Image (cartoon, rainbow over all chains, first blue to last red; front, side, top):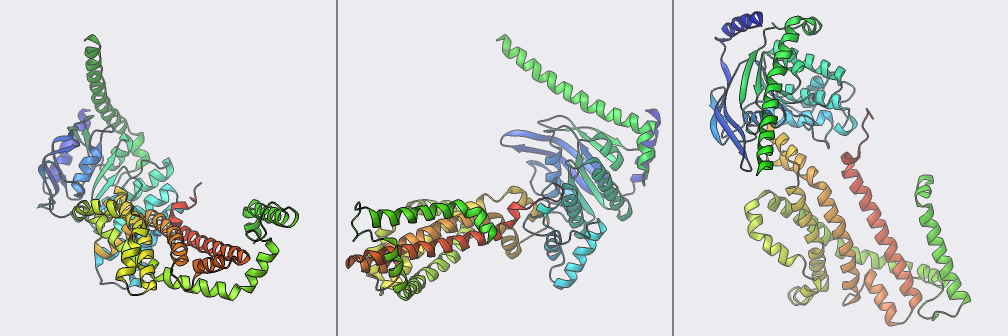
Length: 288
Length: 256
């Protein structure tokens, strides 16, 4: 563990000079009178890949939603590029778990619709079509330009969703468990694709998952949530492996296994505490 | 055609059985009055003799139905989108919608006749009302039930106004809009036939009323059959269009 921590410090020092992409200050969020998030302070640097981890109900997806501007926090302030996002959505691209595409439009039409908003009227229909196709080719969907989401497999849909996110050209991407429903092979392919996007194009990515291995492979920094509600941040781990990463070497290394176990320990500790709390209340209730 | 028969084989058998029963009862039993229940071959003869007259009636009826239905579609969908997307206006006017939509249309007939100069205009007005409410209320419901995921998705790519309405809201609410449109179509025919039996000078309903007055029931039945065929064809076409618009709800996944 000491070795891991040493590396953490060097990574930290390198990051000092980088600008902040997102600053979330003492965020709280309620839904139907239930406290979902409390006291969230989080800074994401430019070009950083931050993964949110936590059990269901910990509010990790809610925080991502708040960062995208789709919902407003009850307390606190969120700045993207130094500007508050309370009034208008930040310039970003979002990939949802399985609904980033409109089912009545083909893969190509879905991307054209997004591009049209972005580029206003500066491009002709043909140019837009060409551009959309080039992004679909980038994610190996050359054979599926005219396919509807209902005709595609889950993996193809997520590829198309990523193509759409990339086409928007924003340097900030939000991804909410985008690979949660995919088979292992597709999942690895798409993880590599997204790592490449992050590393080569210096796009900032905030990514939600509950898979510890996925988190370590992708993240520069992992933010762990306590089991909610209300969820809060229990620990932030700087992942000490330099990018680009070699997946095979990485997952076989002792450091990887140690870090994974460390993360699972934190998660389990939180879950057990939660369960015990529940148990206490129950037995007290039975005693009355 | 082969597919058609494999689907509708039993429908066809039942139709033939009913015709045979009708033929048997009218020709070989004395159970029914031959004046009110003429045998099928007489009705078929009447059908072909009156064919031109039936088609003229059809054209005349469509002159009432088509404009009123098109108007109901435009105002129903347009109004439904407006009130679906403006919660405040909707809340203020919902009591009116609830009060007026279930009123029987016959209540409006005296006013329609008193206020509008011709029978045609009065009929178009009543038919419009019949078709408007189901489409309008269906559209409001459709807009209100647009999946939150679609809204989120549209917001994150910054969709606004024209594209938001045409590419997201209308397609997402189209199942409800179309279900309202189907109800409206059924109701329109019902009202059309009823309206034409009183006061009209031509039309599909008028044809039946006219020959009823002369107790020529072979023509009455020919008219009934003709009207049923027309309604069947219209509904069949509508179902085809509906299936086409909603193609995305029923796609086969490549992986499965």
